[in-house]
Amino acid sequence: QSGDLSAAAPLYKAALDGHAPLRQSWQGLNNYGLSIQSEDPEAAAASFREVLALPGQHENADAYFNLGNALSDTAAHAEAVEAYGAAAKLAPDDGEFAAAHGGALLQAGAAAEAVAALRGVCGALRSAPPGGADWGARAHHSLGDALALERAWPEASAAYRDALAARPAHAPGWASLGNTLEEQGQYDEAEASWRKALEMAPDDDGTLLNLGGMLRRSERMGEARDAFERAVGASPENAEAYMALGKCYQAPKGGLAAADRGETLRHYVRYVASTYG
Image (cartoon, rainbow, N blue to C red; front, side, top):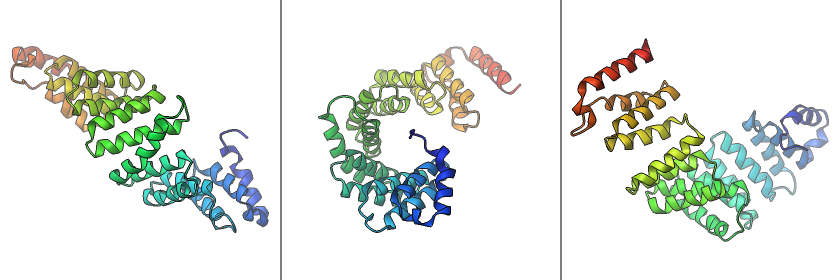
């Protein structure tokens, strides 16, 4: 079997529909659910529930985990918390199940509970050999997100750094690290982190807006303007990007625009003309 079961979905469906006894096979129902999850996560969740309803399968931790994944894909975060929690309870030594439970708590808006759940997982990961599965990096990142919601900026930065040590080519990780560094007044480090993120995702309008905002507040108007113009180009429907760009044409006290309003106005007119015709 390959990692992608979607091509087998019609075969699983035909087998289950054409041979009723197969619906008593947890393997068949499980594989069918996995095969359709990317296209129809609600139907996949129903298939995983069928697995758990079979005799002797109510303690199948993998089925609860698969159900949690499908529910997460449908944004049923509260139900996903329950499913992942059941998987973690049945297999307490499985870090991936515990990490998924913490991530679901975060998605459900329970940041404090997510921090508590993820701290244990991430603490164990720090003492594990380097490398490891991708879910470990996701666990560190989720912990960073939860700590950021709690405004625990230094701890959030540390969690994002742990995530990036395991997954260095992850643009959202660098962007999130930059956000926490700015909150701590570490502006040079924040800028470096955002620029690292933009090397990997040059059209991420959120990162461009964060970088541009800090540059504008530092009265580095030319660089801020470039960042906001890139944000407008990357996301033409983003009103915030246009508003941020407009602020670069105002004259801050002591700023460069105050020294030469004429050139600023000419640049603005040229930009509007090239953008709107």
